[in-house]
Amino acid sequence: MKSSGYMRLDWARTHMPVVSSIRERMIREKPFKGIRVGMALHVEAKTGILALLMQEGGADVTMSSCNPLSTDDAVVKSLKEDYGMKVYARKGETEEEYYEYLNKVIDSKPQIVVDDGGDLVKLLHTSRSEMREYVLGGNEETTTGVNRLRNMEKKGDLKFPMFDVNDASMKHLFDNRYGTGQSALDGIMNATNILIAGKRVSVVGYGFCGKGVALRMKGMGARVIVSEIDPVKANEALMEGYDVMPVREALKVSDMVVTVTGMKSVVDYDSIKNAKDGIILSNAGHFNNELDLDKLEKMSKHSEQVRDLVKSYTFDDGKKVYVIADGRLVNLAAGQGHPVEIMDMSFAIQALTAEHLFRNYKELENKVYPVPFEVDQDVAKIRLESLGIQIDQSTEEQVRYSESWEEGT
Ligand code: ADE
Image (cartoon, rainbow, N blue to C red; front, side, top):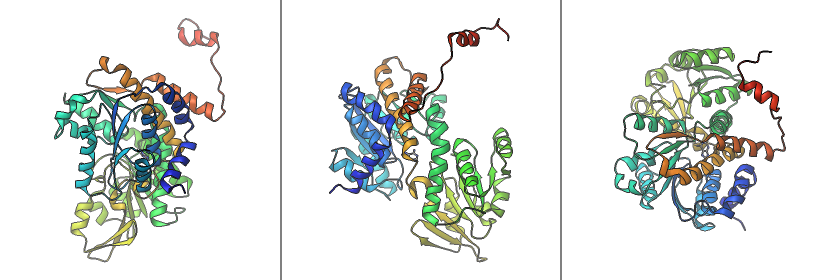
């Protein structure tokens, strides 16, 4: 009998046509032959397929989680037992274990690192800097991690080349928007079983992830309020038909809030204290620091677990607020992560970019690089092919026209 982890991996692979088409070539060509790859990712079925793809392409893969609550233990078991992979991750791991596991990845002397959020790269620049000598470069999956890398680069602290997978078109336009949109709702509904239609839902942050969450909330019948510090994005939200107001005002009238900013303490204790009674707080950003839960924990009169993934906090005046999954990213801590077809595109970008990195590392500097244009285009084309969708091409005359300045009408 197949284990549930094995079946989850199988199901994911079946629904990842882009990765599958790359896989056939990688099995044949073994582009990662003999290369040690260290990954710190959300260890679940789709990520498992990326890790297996690189293993099948010849890599020696060691993997840990990039978040203590996002691991799928059944998948970890199958990766270890059925595929012989070195995986260090456990759902609910302590902070100590979290760092122990990242250090295990570093102990494997990775030559290519695939990070999500930047903790692995940070260790390779701080407590484990002696292991950097093995590293040729790496990829970063997410907005938060890329922000950290850019700060390192600006300060001259980045000591190996890193590719910004997050900002590839075939990643952020789909993963951040439609992926986060669907999976954040999946997590919230799974954790609470609450009706969304008719609710006032506050979305804090209107980047691509916030846009996705707001869009799907609206689609489910919520009345959406957006809070944003960027005046251009605030205008975008307004013209999309959402109310726009500061966090503190939004929380007074909201039944639910989702933070998606990548910034710390965007919902501060004061805003929580003044929020509508019974409000449900959740975070879909990478780190669990977007809601000021430390202060909430200290200042509330009483707290208790009221569902598997929901904790209530009661104030002196009897008012209650609820927090999902300790403010950890709700789409993975309470849901199944982004839909499989979305991660198919993101992880195809990851694999092809890692291949590009390995082919070209000698020419690369200690910088943050964009994903090569051709990788983005290839993934876009393969995805359309896999769906049987054809598109038009410019004629020669149109190409000439688009490249000229003399021609008018
Ligand atoms: N599944 C695997 N990695 C993920 C990510 N970064 N976001 C959402 N779901 C995921």
